[in-house]
Length: 281
Image 1 (spheres, rainbow, N blue to C red):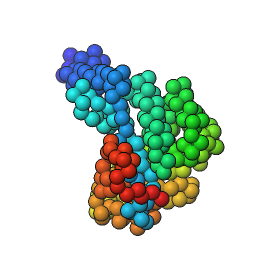
Image 2 (cartoon, rainbow, N blue to C red; image 1 turned 120 degrees about the vertical axis):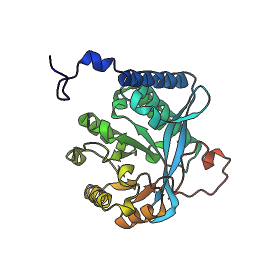
Image 3 (spheres, one colour; image 1 turned 120 degrees about the horizontal axis):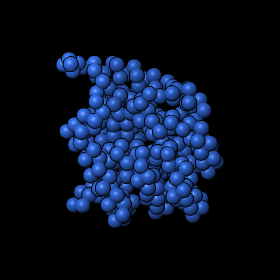
Image 4 (cartoon, one colour; image 1 turned 90 degrees about the vertical axis):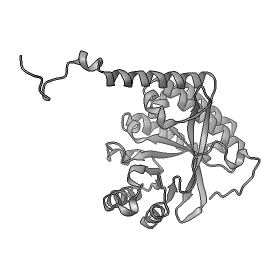
């Protein structure tokens, strides 16, 4: 026998029983249980974050509705803490359906609102999700033109044909589509020719600190050029300071989103009895 080398294949039984793997699996089980409990108890809500016009940064172009769940203590848990765990499960489809249901309810509640809602491409074939969408469009004829569906880049390229047909059908209802987290994965650029995305959202990894990062400046400018070529509007995500906002505005980005302009809130102005100034393009 010889001492194990780093190049030797890993024994799957050893790997599966490693403390780290077991800890990760237990964490994922706990996360699934928390989300399932929240869904069963209807402890799910949206937080709303403004997306601003770059050339008029005091004007809201639209809001993004971000799904949140409450844990057993009532603490609000953001999607980033659970979405990767539930994404490939039916529970992920249920979460998407609930997010859409809450989003459409907000659109019906506030006629001046334009709202984007996140979804996985996997939800396109989920009957509950499609039922929520169709019923919302039937109840209020203005919902379609005020709804933006954000499809994550990583799921869009998994099933491009299904996404393409769905988008063509829904755009006839007035719905717009945004490609979310662009640049976060391994984009198949050829699919951009065939998709019907109206908006491209540049992943925040390339935006945070961009005013001081020549590398990210080159990457972001290339993404803006791609979007312009395909007639897509652009959103810079995770804008957290004035310098980054100014750089992206000067570079030709259409919309800016991030904590510099406002954190997601479960108490937007239209849920506060109209208190506050309504600024919408």
